[in-house]
Image (cartoon, rainbow, N blue to C red):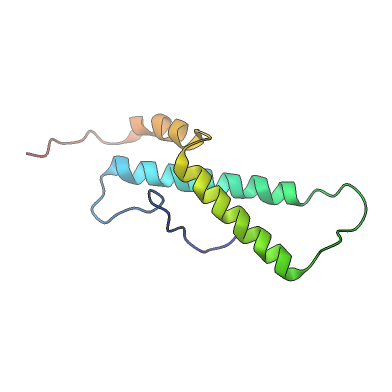
Amino acid sequence: MSAIPSHLPGMTVAPGATDREKLAATARQFEAIFVRQMLAEARKTHFGGERLFSSQALDTFNQMQDEHFADATAQSGVLGLAKIIEEQMTRFLPAQKDRD
């Protein structure tokens, strides 16, 4: 897994963000990590035979492609894992004060 941060909207926490916004961004980041791990494990499968076009460059490209796909998937919310995590963890947040 790469340490390259995502620059997609919604995947970073803005300075001065509320606890709820931080939780939402963190839940999306967790979903992206989860999807990356699933894709990495799926790429490890071999159904016999040798890979015809195997190289270090192709492996790097596939890793970058998987990372981008995972970030875009988490940002779009299509899987819904981040939303479920956010809903479950919201109850642990301190009560918000009114901003007047």
